Length: 540
Ligand code: TEU
Ligand code: CA
Image (tube, rainbow, N blue to C red; front, side, top):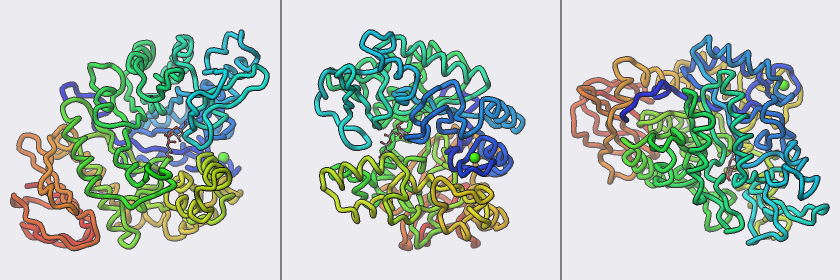
């Protein structure tokens, strides 16, 4: 990496405001709740807080259906609360990253309400209209992606929910308006942007092109020039893709994005030959390791990796990558394996506590528009899945698993609020898994994450973790992931047993010092056996 950036050594923490902390006890998380937990986050050691959309929204998709980009959702507070949050973060050398949903708006957005007034309305072409449901396109949330609008006798396109009409980025006015919305928040001191499904804004529906359209990169570069490229901020795009698409977006000379989430690893528990995330399959850790190596080597000197294992759209990583039978050891091993690689660590709220999926056995207890969209499509309409199988899949992969209220302590509602019914069930295991208990337990997952972040920022090693090279060793040993990070005369090895069997190892170097381990034991100057999910960091 040639040019050093202020954010290269930072750690990002994703907050889903609706589920983080409810300060006014109405059952829904809010900005004042986030402000009340900044010292908890500072203590953990994170630097940048990525808030999922906090703008005005009818909440069909919990904020990813934006009705006004310039107004804070009254459920979360007001614009002044955001100003206070930004200021309180600045006092702590922390920063806010906002989530820009550029691909679509809410159907309650002024632009769409105007567009509904008729074909000659100036906002009509902000959206995508057709006389017929072209190419029988299906929505990501189940069912048709075309919604009939009776007044104009046309259909409008929605990649996601019916209430999320796609913007027409072939209309230059859309770019102009979106640039204004982004600049409004950057001028308030926001220092980062996560772009929602940015790979979709180059769609050319009439040519049946959805992702990675021919003008995509030209559009993103133009938005960079008109808007966020004029600010010293960090950007990450959600861009489901591969190494080539990641490089296309993030090579610095492209002036588009700093990083992308391409999800090759995290989507590997979904069988897309069947019903995607509703056909969950066991994680293939050998595939995960080879994919992580591919991106470490592939992006190394070209751009920058986003290191992510969990977010608001996936099940809890302990259930997807780890082993509930080795709950504490595997939770810690996942962190060591992923967050000492080259790139920017992204930690999702509750991941640092080892929060788990929630057991739900009534479809009506799910909130997510994606769950209900596919339940209607697969179970009720097409009858291709039984209710039992669908619920079983939801317990593993539904997005609600990661949206249950944050577990702060063992009081009512896990301390998320003062007792008001919460918008989504609290996971009953909050009595055992909660921040208060873990803060006081030296051996907790929280304190392990804290130690890991402190190690990554230790002045003796941080340059090596941030800018050092990456070399995988013993790659053929499928249950092991051993890699080194090297810069000048600092040599660090990260040694992970990714499975529940004991493994023998034969390291090609003598250990100098053990920096971190998820097993409390004394190590000799060479290690030749790893216990289940054992993860060790050493210098050599
Ligand atoms: O996610 C886009 C997206 O592709 C995921 O919804 C994914 O398709 C699904 O969860 C996998 O089954 C982004 C946001 O992260 C998500 O929360 C929004 O629902 C979606 O876009 C629409 O804005
Ligand atoms: Ca609230």
